[in-house]
Image (cartoon, rainbow, N blue to C red; front, side, top):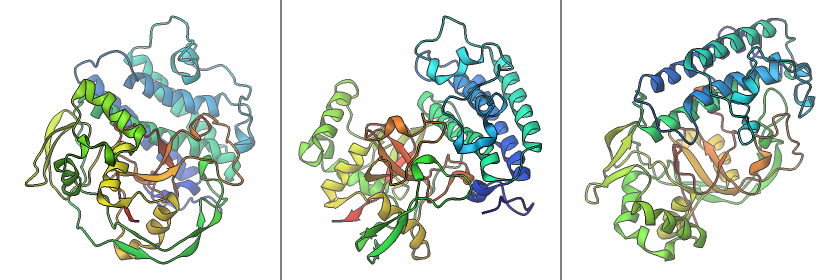
Length: 406
């Protein structure tokens, strides 16, 4: 498929996977402005505790990633055929690798981190060099591969910055998911489905490649599980009954309960059993959530326990993808929260790691597949083929779930 370069195309569209030079240039500037804006929100708030992932490091890492695979990469024109460890030129910042290379985080030398001005200067300079290189780049998928990767990597990290803001109570003014119109579950007939992405444009490596899978007939929720539905599980002492939990999930819950007295999802301060409403801390403010809003900040273990209690199950990722692409006209709603599936993250037939090997390979066999997108996801990342993932105990992201009939 030829790159999309028409000025009528939007940088906020999932079609950015096929974007040409002109749209990529605009989108890269948009992504960097978004990063700088989020960084300013942290810097204007009270300092966060040291330890764990730091927002300033994450912002600097975004610039490092783009420079490492573009400005410094002598094989950038080869695209996915580039070596995993290509010969790299020197950075414009002498300490860039010690400061922002994730692979050196555990063995880095004792070196004070950069101040805010240095981090911003690096972000602006690396963007400028990226755009200059892009102007001279051929309009082909291989030549544009690393520019598209830099864009989508920045979008992924941007949502990670928003997640950090939630963790640390940093005020952000984002439109949160509204109440859903609850529709009855959707019955979908058996079919053969092409799971995964076709060749052409940008494809994340764990989406390679499209292959036929038999999908038996199934019934799936038209929308994610709401707070009102989840509250019923809490009210039925779901967090106190091991019968509803996978043994590993019950062990996870007991570990948390020892320190937190955990009897509900993360960040929940109060649950109104009668009303189905929930009081949850969002970006540092206690927020009353309506019963018909999607339940959020769920670990896979919690989603699985609710399904066991309700006599239902999590959908497989092929069921989710088939519904997202084949049942939109029937009211299948997605995009408010990332959604857990029953599937483990495993490579598909024909998989080969892309040059950024650290993206998927370390998580195969360990993580569960997430599908969909959240309110914090950039619109161009909201692609029905996108295959997210997380460890089953991860409950800090904007994640919910939906269910299928058994």
